[in-house]
Image (cartoon, rainbow, N blue to C red):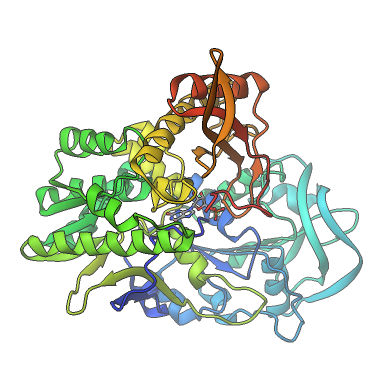
Length: 558
Ligand code: XMP
């Protein structure tokens, strides 16, 4: 998760727009006819389950584990999956399940804690075991197991991924044991008449050899679902939803050129055409080529009504003499929304504001159960400082998509790959990569150095992608950029002494920006970046490589 995926806006007297996702909100949302609800017991792998189901082209959503049977039946799920979780089922504050959920007649698949809670709720027994079972385990199917629909097209002996200390010691009435390991006699059980299936192991993780096959057996053979959740269908459905909501109203969108706002723009434009206006605030601290890319893609290729606000001078004045990092962020964020709302007020009759909120923003804001304590879906804050008296209805068509699904959607909508696979770029832009005061001279140096860094590492990543077929292979670089410190150093170029600026290269491997490690780039690549930056960027005589992980450092320098 990005720490600050919305622009910072502290210090404003304007009120914040807060959007609460109460249980009623998510229950009444429109969703595809076929839909799998994942009841989340605080699982480490909760999101992963929803992902795996979606990978099989069935829509899936995470809901709190203490949802009542009545609430759930309003949502009309086609199937339920009960996730794992850190608690022990008999612990005082262990999360429970409404027993009526298991009597809804909807097929259920429970993993780990989900397996145990089903056993405990329906009259079985769960106990502590002498030895926990963590990591790969050898699963053996018994006779019932080799006939089980869950294990169809999987061998009698296979590797599964375990992570538990408690185990089911006696199965509830109506259930049969289908598989075991050396340590765990009830590694899988089922009551096919009631379509209740459970495993102590985790079918959702890749280390479970046939996990995906089991999931697909459950979804397609047991629940009778169809793999219809494809990008084309998703676009069609989202377009219909947006049209219905907007009618003949007008929509405004703050377009940054980042992945999420770009995909929203393309999608909303597909739905309502010129009823959408995008406002692109150019604060002058964007990377080389970015304003041109936004113009090219949105104005020329997509024909979207685009207001390009040239606020470069306004920002230059605002930031003159400012050196403190937090103050820079604050000023930039505050000014951004001021500029945006000034433009918004020039347009007549705009009722809606489209936003690039994505699913992790929402899950992290409270859909998740942790610590076994009951929790409800809590407020989700959109830190938009609407000026007093200004109101917009929000449209957030990506609020149930994971980042890589947003990217896939972008490609299907025809956005160029270099935009869709763009690495994260902070809202305050190059300003927080220039240490000390932001000046036009420093911006020029950083922009040129950064363009070389990106060109070289883009090519390196592309080579890795070609070799491995994976966009995020083990060695691909997740984020990379140049930083300009506020110092000068001595050098010698062509017999002349120089006193010029160093550039710092930052390149990290990460999956979620919460932790990161410095990228072990080949020396040859480091050497080429260094000689190109010094040779091609005037005012630079030295390149240093930042080899600090996060923590203790952060990815950005300010
Ligand atoms: P740090 O520096 O906290 O950065 O390790 C983590 C990730 O967040 C991005 N980042 C930002 N993104 N507005 C944004 O939209 C910001 O103010 C901001 N600050 C950091 C950073 O690029 C990295 O991917």
